[in-house]
Every structure is written in structure tokens, then in C-alpha cells.
Length: 112
Image (cartoon, rainbow, N blue to C red; front, top):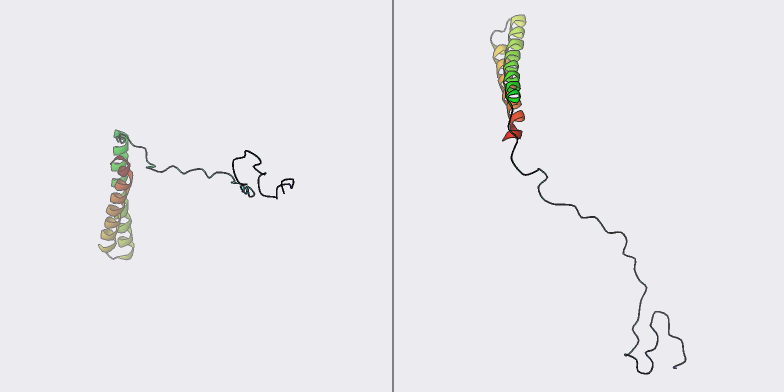
């Protein structure tokens, strides 16, 4: 038995003065490429927030005024054409004020 070759999947005989019995060594499994880790944490840079410039504030104020005037003007023009005074003018003003508030909140949110 000592002259027999080792069976497949096992290491050779320890022989005289060896360290012990044979250990099976199965086929190795390839591990494949490693998956990169995705960084976690805040995506928004931390630090001091930007401060609005005078031009930013002027733009927001002008856009709000234009929204209110345009809404009221379009409503007044529809009332004049249809003879339904003051319903469309009030609705136009309400729409103008709503759009002005949404515009200001959207533009100034990045500074808060």
C-alpha cells in the first residue's frame, strides 16, 4: 500500500516521520471580482451654507411682483371680456400670490 499513488483530491502520504493522516483537498472555487463598496453618508456637502446675494434677493422680489401683477392682469382681462367682474380678477390675483410664494420658497430654500 505504501507504493500506491495518492488518490485524486488528497495529498500524498505523510510517510515515515510525517505529520499525520492525509487531508483531502477539493477543487478550488474561483472567487470572482470583488464588488465595490458604495459610500454611505450625507450626499450634501457639510459646512457653511451659502448666503444670498443682493442680486438673488432682487430677482426673487421682482419675480414675485411680476407673478402677482400678471395673475391679476390676466384675470381682469378675462373679466372684461366676459363681463364677469370681479371673479376672474380675484382668482388671477390668488393664483399670482400662490405662484409668488412657491417661487420664493423654491429659490430661497437653498439658503436656509
